[in-house]
Image (tube, rainbow, N blue to C red; front, top):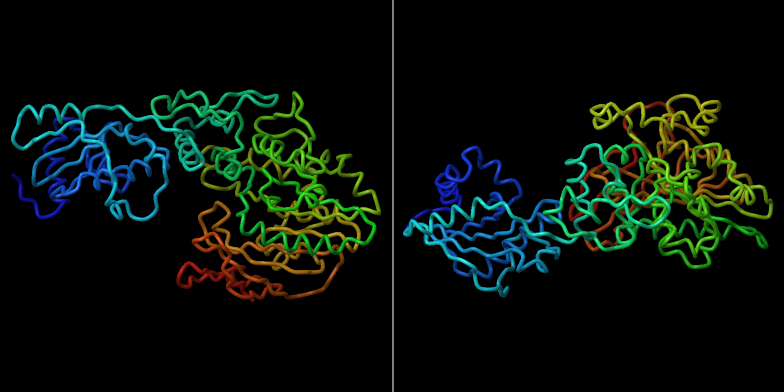
Length: 516
């Protein structure tokens, strides 16, 4: 019997003994990468000084495997629990616990495991006393088999990341392509080849199940090129207050349309009434988002641009005719009929994209110039005739400028726009009347940073206002809004500091301060 004082001591000694017999090139760093006790070939190992409750330790291992699945990492076929001081190891097959592995767990994996009841172990190895047991254990640790898992909304982002890493030239269609629509590419999730040993084919005929994750399923460069980000449901619902204020401004007897030129799968419109949806005109430039949006909202909204898919709609992963910065789109007859109608009120409701085309990813792949093609668009060309300085270098600004230039034309027209407020504060891109707005935390928009994103209701009427207040909101752990008071926004006439600073306050409430 061994007599280790700590699990770490016993774990290191175990690996020191067995690794040279399995693969002398492996190191502890190779094995310990996911906050568990080690993944060695097709084996998840868990060490305890003494195993007092095998079922509880087994459940801890199930949680580790769940985490691997969510990260897009192969799930080892074997679970090996090691009793260090007893010098015994127990083998379980992860396939027997697939239903539990495909659940999502919160909190520490070692917590709250009592009460779990698993099957009896498949094999036991008394490796401290029996040479045959040692031989059998080494044989198991050399195995490289994995348990195939099912793709769902909890793990698809992890597997997408893994796929684009494994196949750097792959595009979104290569990963989630389906058999619907005119363009038929069957992607990896439906016909696995790279991950054939790790995942079952996804049986969903379309990608509607992943509607709120579509921006995260783009390959790395496409994410940068499109600049599109998900709008959190809580923030989208709050912005509906501003949309309804805009609808209230519609003159009696007027028709109105709500235009969203960058709708993605339509999550900004989720929660609108059927009546409100019947006034919506939506478009998105990414093909697979377009197909999901058609399926979800096609029968509810007034128009989708383009209204139906043609043989040439698919254009290298994008939607032909849906580029909001093109002259073709600005002159689209479906939209123009409403803009040219004096008895129709125009409301734009958007979370415009933004792109960082000088990012490390672009430079590394030599794609910076290619991904900046939007700067040569019709709208940006027109914008540069009227706007001086660096404002025209921002993709989001092109949407904001064109909203007032090409769409809004009457005092009761409105624009509700999500964006960092620098376009008004520091760049002086517009001089319209402020009717209300909120400040949100950008971290919840499928990004990794804390920063301020405003959503503001603007009127088409001009104004010389130099300051206003935004009501600030974060999203708490329960998914509900947490107010952090009013944030003053003052126009800058010389750049003395960054537009925003952030300081943390306790219990997840984040205070965003817009500098004076």
